[in-house]
Image 1 (cartoon, rainbow, N blue to C red):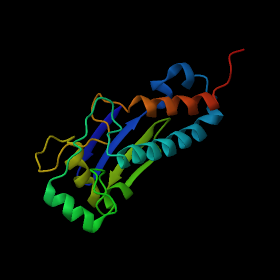
Image 2 (image 1 turned 60 degrees about the horizontal axis):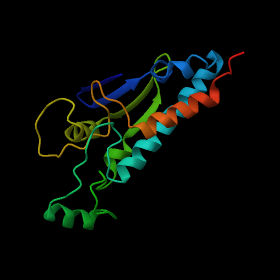
Image 3 (image 1 turned 120 degrees about the vertical axis):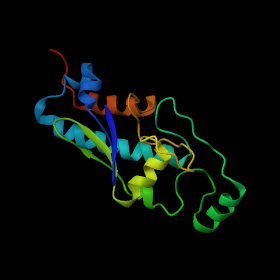
Image 4 (image 1 turned 90 degrees about the horizontal axis):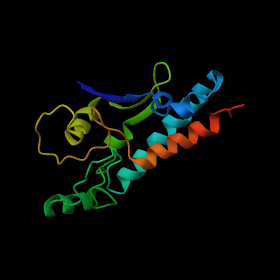
Length: 164
């Protein structure tokens, strides 16, 4: 599992077949691409759902729930929610994409103008900024919460062939 940030690109990439080898090794090669696509779709939906509830999808990460009084009032004029759910206008989360990567990897990433903003919340580069840490992309040595990992295992189980 690896996270990295370079100008205009924030990326987390991992191999779900390697992460869960008992199931991943049972998925026939001709089914791996389809499983990879379903896992990438599931991850994006799960991350957006958890972040929409003002929580982190990253295991062990907290989420600063409060907004300053001024920002909360401003957000009410821009968004339908006054929660700390990363949606002011929706541009940053709209830029979040997940797709199959090289080999059997799955990628969660933000490219372009929104990548710097995303890194400001994920704090992966260590650069200081005024944004509170609200990590929605795993950092080095981190992984998704158990609910996401359970969903990935369920998808692998759907594609796995039974032992004979």
